[in-house]
Structures are given as structure tokens and as C-alpha cells.
Length: 330
Image (spheres, rainbow, N blue to C red):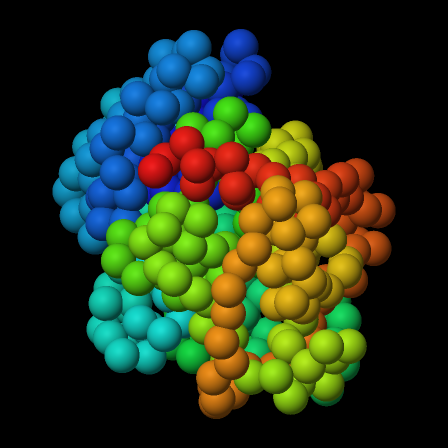
């Protein structure tokens, strides 16, 4: 099978690339604009996989280069992970998110249709749901995103659904909850440029000695310890979910939440590093941020039933793999 992976040198994309390359029959092409990824990740993927693949630096906003890639590539399946993903940044610079996420995806879909490529698996997010009174989110919840990042993902979902209804593509939409953890080797993990907006990359900087303490925004949430609770899924479980989609996408279009079905508080995560890695994380409390909700997590039944997938890893594996990556990347 000839597969195109967009955003393939990013955190999730690089781990997915390793998973795809385990199949001897897979011919993989990776594209990435390197705006939030390092070219050196390509060499890490080669080293860990011991497999050959093609890589091209490409911005999906460049319609002409994308069309040329499709003419040569003759792809059977697209994994679409490319896009900007910071909620905070999307509120400050919405134009960037509409251009990178929406226009880039439109160009990709146009190239697919022009070159008769039918199958796409899209990296979406639980952020599309927005705020709901119920804590356990299922796929039939209404989508009411409260930030530009979530709105761009909803727009792309709508494009995919519309094209599917017109029988132009087959699509599976995966709404991620909170990917975390790193590759078992310690050589591949989440290492974004600049100051991280997410919890685990920030903790990596603390372990590496680049930051002294963790900022916890709020201690008055309606949870067991007052800190916000989220559904964190190990990156390898997320990869396994993608691999399960390969056969299904040709038969059925659908939408799946991808999470563990269990919420962990910020203090749960801090304590896991002490328990499993013997590493103490210092922290200070700050005012609660506007828009942050108390608790949300995934209802796992649909993915388990229709995709034949469920998460197998928890905080132990997430903390240990994160610590291992941080130590090796010092």
C-alpha cells in the first residue's frame, strides 16, 4: 500500500510513521513543512525503523507542489496530521490557523479528488466539542468549539463529511483527546519549539532543567484534588488506533473518539513521576484560566465495538517513557 503521511515529522506523525513502517508492504511518503518539527526526526525514524521511506519538505498551502506530488505518488491512502494545533496561539493569530489548517486541507482534498485518491484518515480533536454539561464525551455530542483551533478542525470535518456524502472520498475522523508519552527507545518524543502550551512537554523541560517549576492554573476545579482532569492517551495507543483504521476506511466512513475513558488530574500526573520515576516536580498554583473546564474524558464504547481498539497503557507508561525521553534528549 502506498501511503502519504502529512505532518509526518511532528510528535504524533513521527510515531505513526514508525507504526506504518512495520508493515513490509507499506510504501511511505512523508511531507512536513518543518514549522513545528525538526528535520533530524527523519533520521531518527530511519534509525528506529531500519526502513526506507520518502520525505519531502512541503507546505500544503503550496497547491502546485502538492499536485505534482500526487501525480508522481499514486497514493492509496492519506493520513492527514498536518496543521497548527495550539489553542492559545489560534486565539492570537486566527489567520495562521485558517490558512494552515483549512486552506491546506482544501488543497489536499482537491489533489485527492483530481488524482482519484479515495481514502483519508483525518487527525481531529476533542476540542471540536467545546463545553458540555456532561463530563464523558461521546461521538454524538454537538460540536460547539470555543476557540479558532477547534473551529478549523470542525470546518475540515464538515468538508470531509460533505465529500463523503457526495461519494468523492472515504474518510475516518479520529478525535484525539490528549496524546502523551514517548517512544520506548527514548529517542522520539514531544519536543515543540518555544514554550510549550501542553502539560507533558512542559514537564519535559522541567526534567531537563530548563524550567524550575510547573505552573498549575487553578486549584478549585470540581475534581478529587481541585486540579483539572483530562483524558490522556499514550502515543503508542494512539498509533495503534490509526493502524486499525487502515482496513476499515475502505469499507466504512465514521468518526471515533480516541482516548482511554479515564480522567487524570494535574496532581495525578505530577505524582506519577514521583511514583514511577522517582522524580519530584515542583509546582505553583496560579489563577484559573478562562474557558478551562473541570473535567472531561472519552466514552470508549464506539471505538471498542466498531474499531476493535482500546487503550492498553496508563500513567505508568506515559510518565516512564516521558522521563526516559527527557533524560536522553538533555
